[in-house]
Length: 588
Image (cartoon, rainbow, N blue to C red):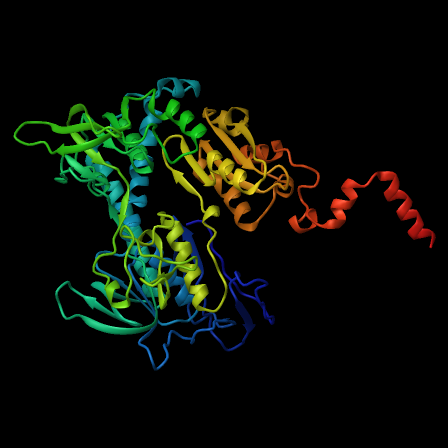
């Protein structure tokens, strides 16, 4: 919980200067009570946790919203907004709607918080916090450099598991209280769309309860994807759902998939003493990362640790351990499908990505067909039917639409949809949304990878440049004895546009936001390079990165000006001729 914003003003009315601002009018009143909902921001979530009593009666805060005030729906509908799914995306949308005074309901068939809070980013960060400390305590050379002497580090498996579970419970409780505190109705059961602006909720197979809503948001998230031929028993062959419970730490575990999920779990398991074997279908590990960052990460995160790997192979069949036999994994060549090898391990973690959870939504009732399980939407997250037409008043956000399967992306989409419904134009720029892998050290990124940027440049006819800085030159990183790291900037040298930033190093997940905000706001390198950073801090890695970029003198010109006939004439006309023309104009 990092930032607390309380908007109070005396005898003034403050109107937001842009459509993306919170439109609040603050009016003084000697007899009114405080009606404010300060937002506490944490872990990509927002919760309302500050309640001010009626004794403080000097100020009144009035929200300027298009929708009806005081949480009341119109006579035509039960709710202004109904959200199916109470994960991070649904939670973000619900809070934003409630702040506008809308009567809002959120339907949840499992537990509030969805995958992220209960089976994903929240408990995994608890495990990674443990692995980070274990890794540091086990590194005798690292500790000796500080002049520290530490006895052999150990851990209590159940204590580690409890830490992850307790964190998930705490955040889940916070989310639930935040929804209730703003008057959002939490409706238990499975949500099904019956038709335009009509939803049923309740237990599967029951008649359920029917409610109406002016607008509906689908936010049902995703589940672990399990390939064919893989038998998950939840004990020796597991998905991330079971792995986060840490019911046992195997001596040898195979991890199928080397993306975010697989990398983070390899960090946890190796820190706790396991040997890891990666099974990757593509020809290289970490296929979703910028190739240069991926190679460096492999050198630091994989090669020195008890990790080996297979690339270019499929796990065609995985059989759980039973009757004293180990887990058996049959590997085949990803291209030829010929048998490659057989592994016998203590456990296998299936980390092959996630699949949208969109069954049972009643999409057929609004003539919508999923595409590979995803609900088709336009750039405004509005659902598209089988004829390619927009379905009125129905939206889909988060993993269920497949645009960007990240919890904070889902929240951003949910807030954007509420803005759309309010009549304010708002489109999420997904290229400005950062991503992070919380290994030790961390990996973070925003925008395009270098190959993606060069492909785009070739199609659109512009040049691409790359700048890099090392953590070895950063005072704070060296003070922490963590100089291993690299920051990489991909940009246009002609106009200073930031195309992508990739960071591998200490606290990379925190550092990336300066770059993501710059992309979101359209800030160019020639402007951000003058920003001042505290010294000595890790943020100076980004400072040096932007300063090292070489942008042309005309880089800050607007594209329309750069292509104007006048500028073209000035460039192509001899200077003497231009000078004579100017003299003749002034002389007349």
